[in-house]
Image (cartoon, helix red, strand yellow):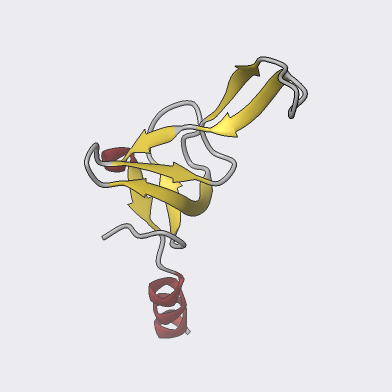
Length: 82
């Protein structure tokens, strides 16, 4: 099960084969945000409090396009080969 804070690998899309950490989960829509993955441009209008401009931010990815990368399992496999 994919949870916040775990490391995942992207299986499809423009960021295929990249790895990152899950920063947010949307269980209702089966989607997750991964740090520095699936970046989109967001146009923000200037207000009294904030300066506007074009900002990059992460967008949601469907959970079926993510694979859990468990480092503990990798370590056990590499130790078994030695």
